[in-house]
Amino acid sequence: MAETDRSAEGRNQPHQTWFRDELKRLEDQVMGGLDLVVSQLDRALEAINYQDIELAAMVAADDHRIDGRYVEVHQGVLSLLGRQALFLDDLRLAAALLHSIRCIERMGDQCANMAKLVPLSGYEAPKDPTILEWIEKMGISVRQEVLQTRDAFRSRHVSLARDLVRQDKEVNRLNRDIFQRAVDVGDDPEVREWAMFMVLVARCLERIGDNTVDIAEQTVFVVTGLYRQFAEMPDEGL
Image (tube, rainbow, N blue to C red):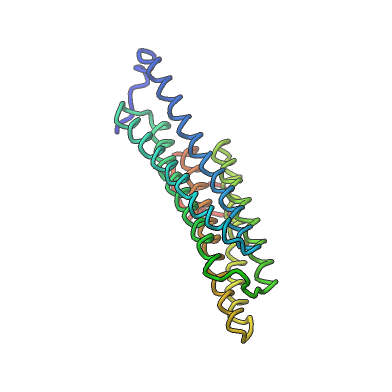
């Protein structure tokens, strides 16, 4: 949709003010979606750590809250796009919100997937303390990534957004370490089976981290008007 003439803004100020207020409301909905992800992530990790099948079932059942947020934001942005031509900065934000809420919906799915693995490994599954320790570290790092990408988007903080790359490298390292530990964990078939479930948990956490980086890239897009994946960007500057 083409950029509108700025000279027309004054003639249509009340409607434009309403539009910007609505776009801000939708942004708040997206950022609140990240808060929902943090809550789901915390409960999923608690269920895994304590083998709490009832809590895991609650996490899986509550995934509809994030799905509903996705539908609401998606429909809200598309409705705004159909009402009037947008200034380019508004159009960038609308596009970033659509992309980000999709990432959030995927994060919610990964939390639900982790929770669904808990009953599969049984009530009294034997555990490997090292793998549990690394899962906990990975969970803490991913939780911080979710909060940081939320703060970076809210404040339009480019350097904070780009710092997600550094944090995500640690998450990826832990993911690899957990996989290798599961391979080397020993000959007890029950321990090995449980370890394979933890490999899947680590993969879910790794994907949540990747989605935080995707949202961080949208932050840079909103600020600069240029979209490039962080992997394609130089180490210094934009």
